[in-house]
Amino acid sequence: MSEYSADAPGVTIAVVGGSVRGTSLVERLVSHAAQMHGDVPVEITVFDPHPPGSGRIWRDGQPQTLIMNTVAAQSTVFLDDSVEVEGPRIAGPTLAQWCADVVAAPAAEAAALPAPVAAEAARTRDDSSPSRLLYGHYLRWAFARIVAAAPASVTVTVVPARVDALAREGRGWRLTANGTRYAADAVVLAVGWLERDDVAVHPRIVPPGNPIDQDLSAVTPGETVAIRGLGMGFFDTLSLLTEGRGGRFSDDLTRYEPSGREPRIVAGSRRGVPYRAKPAFGAPPFFPAQRILRAALPALHARRPVDFARDVLPLIERDAQYDHYTALDRVRPGAVTDLAALQSALVAGDPVDLDTLVPDGADRLDLHRAAAPLEVRGDDGGRRGANADAEVAAFVRADAAQAALGADSPVKLGLHSYAAARGALIDLVAFGGVTAASFPAYRRFLAVAASFGSGPPLRRARQLLALHDAGIVTFTGPAMAVLPHATGVRVTAPGLPAPVEASRLVEAWLPTPTVAHTADPLLRSLRDAGFARAWRHRVDDGDGVTSDALDIRPADGAVIGGDGEVVPGLFSVGVPHEDIRVFTIIAPVPGTNSSVLRETDAAARASLAHAAAVHAAVTGERHAQSEGEAA
Image 1: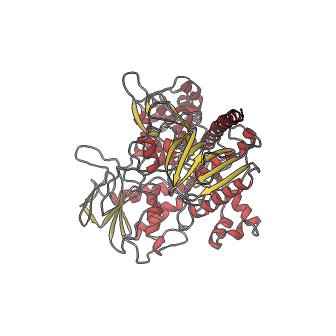
Image 2 (image 1 turned 120 degrees about the horizontal axis):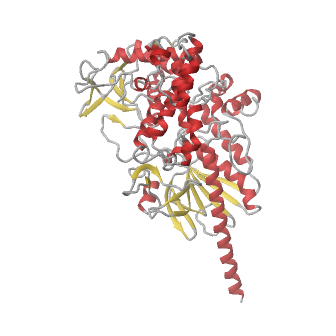
Image 3 (image 1 turned 30 degrees about the vertical axis):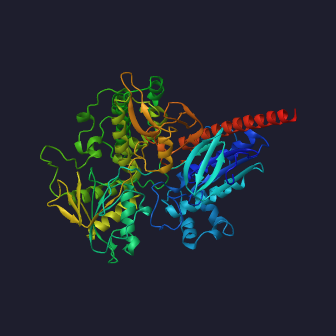
């Protein structure tokens, strides 16, 4: 696809966004093109201002201290035999396998890598938590491999620019990027995480965003800075402000040696405790059986929409209890007086007499307390205990100890089961699978499950404890509140002995992308032109409940316009649909029939089919016109 022309000799497809999902789209387009179009030329153009494959998030130049929370063996962009799609597929390695290939073929892949990255690849194992930098190199290599495998009839071109506008042009689309116009028969959006326009702006607040895109240069050594958010973004920000400024952790991660360039950090959030550390299984995390939930899924699918709080959540909780108590009986024989009776009751959904079956209350799994271990309660804001900083540190220390036990921690196995239910639910809950009334309960479940299962590797928790012991980090506890003013921010929380004055606030969380309040010029222009709208829960007695997701046709990602009709030739995949199709934000996991790869496959096939129809119609019109002129 070159500068704008509506007279391309073949089929033209535009992919807007070149990171993980854009790369997968190119693979599926290349794989299907020859089969669907024969010798008709297919031109695929990828638009992204950052190098294709890695895109913005995984781009080069970021510090190696920023790491993934997915292990190397569970990171891929290639399809395997578990993925239920039609047509051919380009084979390729997982990140872990690619690292092994780099070591085995130093004259090829390793020669193109910077020495520190090649060294990391050499020490990467299946259960390693790789740097984002290493993953970015893998993604760029994967993109190049996919393009190299394209047949002669398929051309892949990269335009290193952001698409600013889309408009209908005849039967196809006109794209504008950096002032240049391009034509396409079909467009697939793979735009990733989009910013919002309703985030508060203040000179003393670093707004939410990906940590590598946030400007932390104004944070000076020794000043007190508040960080709000205790998920993965928090650990990245913490790394940038500590080891990223020259500090060092001891080899066993028990001590931190400051460089003198660190600020003093006051950290908190609504829940008040960091995401829990991942268990150290010594191997890639396994996928729990979810025996109770999965046994019920066919019946639940048959009567969609279901009430999530009534019909689904109790099944998830029973699976978590099943795995917790099964592990407890294994690691501490006698703690469960009759495991078979307990398991049978949980599977059947019968009442469980825990007083008899698990006599020691400390051995029981309390999911509510696990979700909010330092819960603020009562009108006076009273909490368990009085020293929030010490309480949070004690929580992190106890959680790290459980994570170190790996599969021998009943608590971790129970919470692992709870979090893993998200994957089992993808097809059930998508696009109105739960009732509008119970949708908030589903969102609350996702937040709790993320705190259980989307946390950092164990080493990050140990680093946090070392920073706390060194006096670099203190915690506010739950219900953190921040009041910005002209010279800084005032931090309050029920567990703080007194308000804390900080020079600025760093927002270490990402707001959910939304159609209604998007700050992205492209999506905003599509919305305003009637080419896009937010998905809504349909209800019998009103207009429905609006979600944050871009409305698409579930089968193939075709975008739904403001009039409720499919917009011809416009498709979308990935993060803009997270609110109605969970796990669009994670990279494909091998061996799981990845919903991400199924989604990109469906959009690729549909866009090629639409483009073929456009090409045939245009060719027919030209032929008829030629015959008319000849006559």
